[in-house]
Length: 435
Image (cartoon, rainbow, N blue to C red; front, side, top):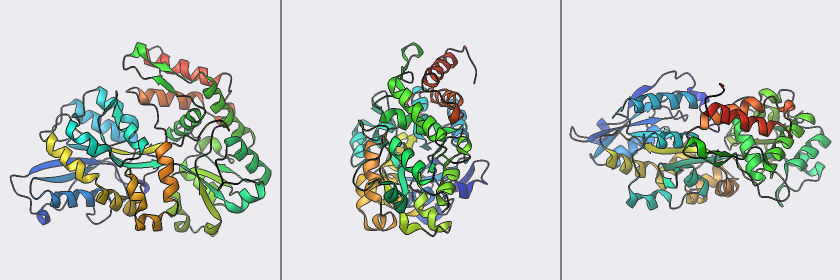
């Protein structure tokens, strides 16, 4: 899952399509190195003026002055399909994979397999300065920076101001807990839009709840299998399970909570008869007017709900980091290109053009960003404390096992579900069970 990165507009793309970006217009020569950048769909498509990765590729090609040119290949829409396509190519030693837009949960798997070219030591500072903390953490593996933070994402709490006021919640004066949120929604007969379908978004929610209770799904990632230590069967895991069950039992998650994803949750919030609260990514701010919502002036935003009144919120983290393929014939030039791609100028262009937040903290102070995102400061504050999903080369199995055991939400048992999910994960990793 990409934490909703505007892929819907390019869902018709079923296979990778090679797109040469502005080579003739950029004065490239026959001697310039051609770098191929595998990009995730971002709404910009292949248009070199669309504000997306294609435009950045064209501009960086021009700025290179003939040293290199960047071609883009558009990856499939789904994150899992993107992962599979890149892994197949890299497993075959494909030298044509120079740059990759990588979903953070997959970074450890690529790094552990030796599929990422080492980040030059003299470029680490340039790739980490002015970055929000969560973006740097998500770009590391085994204590080292292995990819370059590009854009970042996080969830906020969106709410109807009138509903919060009627429920006695002061969301502008401090953090709200999930317990307070459930009580408020129940008292006002409104809903809380959450993601609890059996998919990656559910793992995102569970991870945020456990982290907010001071715990971790993965205490020790290994890398050896025998060194893996899980933190699901813990007080934090049980507290997270209790919150999921409370949302289901109070029926504030809506009539289809067990099949809710970002879009279902958004639709629930946009319905004036049920609208109360929503946890979702910043893309929803542009969706409200596009979808004809008439109560935009009544919509407020705040930091992600805290798991309890003792800890701080641990908002979800999403985004994209740039990886350089281990078999690239031009790794040095690829990292030069990555520096151009992730510059302040291009992160600003990308945030304004696609709505995907920057990983550079300073971008949030730009006038055009503040105009487009009045909650820019809250997004940045959230990104500074956001918690990435567990970093492990076994992430796919871990996430799928959690989704399986914690579904449906109304069947979650705080005393049993966390322990069962931990047991299934380890059984799968040992080859003693299948998903």
